[in-house]
Every structure is written in structure tokens, then in C-alpha cells.
Image (tube, rainbow, N blue to C red; front, side, top):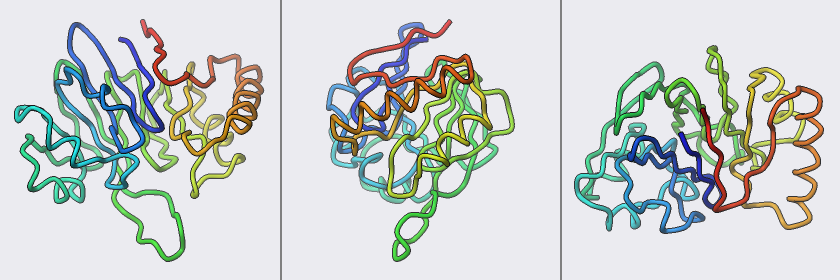
Length: 210
């Protein structure tokens, strides 16, 4: 399986000629969806969901997501499937399980929205905007590293709780160049401590998983 990092919170997974895209929001590149067979969307915030971009996608594109996002896509001509915590399904040759129900608490005046995390092929876990612990082995974690709802100690504790063999930064568009340098340092410290591959994958670059 090949993981490709796109802007902010978007990842593209390629396997056996099939393409699965996670959270192609407004901060991700348009080409992330090129040739996509299916899309997974964790929640309805614009940095993870761009209905207008999906509106121009092929009508047979499958979108798997929570109920709130399905409502937002009611007028978008794609095939929307609703999932919730504890579901399991197969799409485009990928096996997917879902974990989590709610977005992490954000601004005190903003409502907490639905958020579902995705475990793909029992290899890659993408929690969306929450620090969901799926209670199963997580070989590769796509770990949120900056957000209004996230502090550095919580991110580090999340890595230490899950202890993945590999963890790659996601949800990181809010960093400046200086901030990205600090992030790289923090991730290297944790990689050295855990003896794991924990780092930032620059936009457009990829990682090969066995």
C-alpha cells in the first residue's frame, strides 16, 4: 500500500490499482481526487469536506462518512454511504473499520459535531479530529499535530498510548515554516524515544507500507 500526503488533512491510499482518498477538504490539492475509486470523510468541517469539489467528481464515486456529512452531501451527485462507530465494510478493495463518534471539543461556542475514524486494511488508522484510541493494534497512525482543540502534551500522550510502529503527521497546515521545524523536532524526539518511524511527510511525498 502506498500513502501519499496532500495538503493539511488529506491522504491518498493506493493499492492494486485502486485509490482511496481520505478527507479532501478545502486546504488539499484538487489532484488528490484524480482517479479516486472511493472517499472517506471523517466529519463536516471545511478542512476535511469540500462539497463543491465532490460535486464535480464522477457520479459513481463512493463516499463513506457519518450521518451529518451525508446530510451535507444530499444534493451532491455521488454515492453516499453512512457509517458509525463499530461498522465494517469493504470499498475499492480496501477493508475499513470505523472507530469514534465525536469531534474533540473546539471553541466553547461551537457545537461538537460527529466524527468517525477509519482503520484501513488493519494497517492505517486515521482518527479525524479526535484522539480516538481504537483498542486494536495500530501499525500506522496518521496523527493530528496541530488544531485549536489540540495541545502538544495531548498529541505526545496519544502517540504513547497507541505506540504505532509508524506515525505520520496530519492536520498540519496551520503551522508556519518555523512551526514545521519545531514539529519535526518534537516528532523526532518521540521517534527516538519509542524506536518508531514517527515523522512528517511533506505534501506530495509518499510512504510505502508492506
